[in-house]
Amino acid sequence: MTKVYISADNIISSLGFTTQENISNIKQNTTGIKLINDSYFSPHPFHASLVDSKRLHSDFNKIDNPDSFTRFEQMAILSISDALKKSNIDVKSKKTLFIVSTTKGNIDILEEKNKNSFDYKKVYLWNTAKLLQDYFKNPNTPLIVSNACISGLLGIIMGSRLIQSGQYENVIVAGGDILSGFVVSGFQSFKSLSTTPCKPFDVSRDGLSLGEGFGTMILTSNPQQISGSDKIIVAGSSSSNDANHISGPSRTGEGLFISINNSLKEAKSLSVENIDYISAHGTGTVYNDEMESIAISRTGLENVPVNSLKGYWGHTLGAAGIIESIATISSMKENLLYNTKGFKNSGVSKNINIISKLEKANINNCLKIASGFGGCNAGIIFAKLS
Image (cartoon, rainbow, N blue to C red; front, side, top):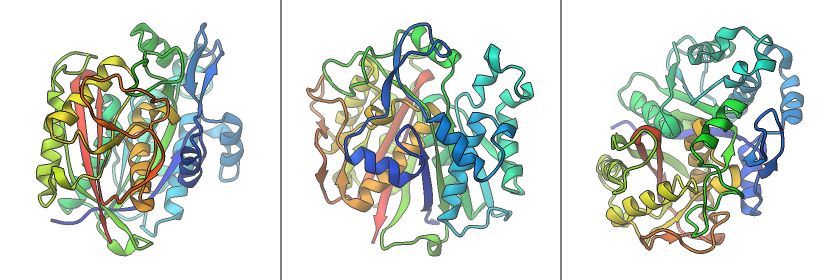
């Protein structure tokens, strides 16, 4: 089977506008989550992770006119542009495809104060994807992945399979989300927001922290596109749906259990014993973290080091699967396990091995997992080829 390599990447978040800047802050145990007291988002203060709008405007102004693009579009173009600088793929080739992953896209256009700022059709996801296709002069109709919180991971899975099937040589998976009053009020209606910065897997956790960001991962079948001694590939992947509830995850972790097992089967040469690290979804909600601990334990991975990065960025929705996968790959390259920000004492029923401090480790194979509303689940195994 054709190998799918990670060629280049970028992260834009509250912790920085490059992958290096984000990872540096994570290693310093710095969080981008702050108390937000802004009536634009909510009449009540809440904790969230926001991208610096002034820096976004300033950085984008170096490549184009910010007034011609929405905030979401600026983040997308900046992220993709930075990733492309680190890759030699031909973005204008018919052998290159764009996959756009998001849950809401230009959702802020629905806000009263913004409704006359841009053409209303920009609220449609197909319009955003077409804009990115045209901006980078790509000849192929882009694909859109919008499947709740697994969107980013599912975008990587789809891109990998399109390369493996020989339809494309390169796939640019780009995904993100921004916050708005609509988004915040939706999570408030579920009573799922934490009263403090989120605490994944901790006994005192009481909800998630929202975040915004954008991530880009470039996949390729050409190993010559990779710089450095370590080459990371997508070794196996799977998605599933437990059809349990519109928002609540399966109490038995069935869907995620299936995704993990099927990812291992696709990886073929890898087994449970070969997994060195798990990057969990770890939202900090009571039900998600418990479900993940059950699924991890059911697959025999309870002794494998596991973390959640939500304590640094918050839950970035359509960006989460991408930027957390990029951080996972960084862990592999540096042989370094990042601690779970906000975690102190385990509050899940299964005794999984939650990473509580930054530590060195030999990391060759990683499992990245995600789950979301509607019972969706996904898993990807990244493997290092030295």
